[in-house]
Image: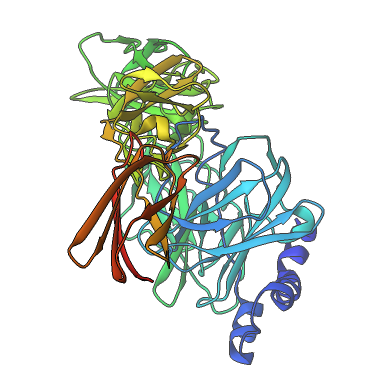
Length: 534
């Protein structure tokens, strides 16, 4: 115990060393207060391992740079068992290496460290406003901090209770013989700190306060016969209190025998699968007398589960890796109540991952320029079911286009005038589902027409060239008008070009009109030029 007190007294030096590495320096007044204040902390919950469908409390998140899947989280309460927002929480590896720091949130007093690699970690809590610090599970320094062994994918719950009053290290004790007329003396036990702490006493008869019995000593009376006596020591600092109660004395002899109590003759039992998401059912146990009223309290790792007070309980992700018990309390008017606990049921395992086939929620869509030479792009659409991969197959008139299996399609002359769609296939371990988009109709490619007219003696030489993504085949109509004479010649493009010579023209300005009539994949085009005929 002396070693523990020395460790507690030197904690401030260790905390200030920690602060110099990961915290802004505190004021001189704050440092003086921290040297005089000891915090009490009790773990409110043990480790909690969760499965893949894990739901967390709203908490201050501290993402870690690693690529792990582990998580350490918890809730911090302070004096009076109230939510403690703004508490600094630091995470270290067990070898002393600093990992990350965060602050508890304002609504739940919660914190969480995400993305942790497997390994051993320790936690440090600090309430800078009240100058209180603590290592997890009531440890005074980093060397004695309780390590958290974190495995891959594990979620560990590390709750804490910080008090700025005083912490009871050794329970109070009672000296003297518990008989009527004798005097009992209370020892307050050991606390830290004791400077500026006010201590008071309350004697108890069968766990009920004895009116006026608030001194360090108590004289046993006839009213105590048949009961046990204990003493509660209360530590008070600036209106905040913490208390600790001694073990009870032996029953004070004499007087009437104790009130007859309900007796448990068989403990309750739990039935149901030991898998997350299962419904567990508890029996009442057996009692004498049998006509008692029974209430239930489910426990996880020995700690009560909030709200779990019925005969059935549905396991959650918070139960994974833990064993569950149920505590039944039987009561009847005129009799003292009694409580029995079941054997442990567990550990609870994570629910198996259920893979469901993909289901189409929103059909894929085709976007882009729907004409020859343009590019179409496909969206995957929206899907339900488990995550998977996506494949594409473009279709023309409802039939697959050979080799067109990517998310984009370059439109070729063969696609002109056709209805183009895409079929997206979503695949996962449970199967594959396909869904087609609406079709778009492909327009012909625009044609760029280049015309060069060269005039000569009684003739005009017309050179025609086309450019575009289409095939650029088909007919060309060349019209040459000089004065009142008009000559029309029809020809066919060869490799997208053709030259025509129009003879027998009078002198003057020749107006040349070239009309390309287009083909199955190329749009029509017209061009007008002029030249001189000699």
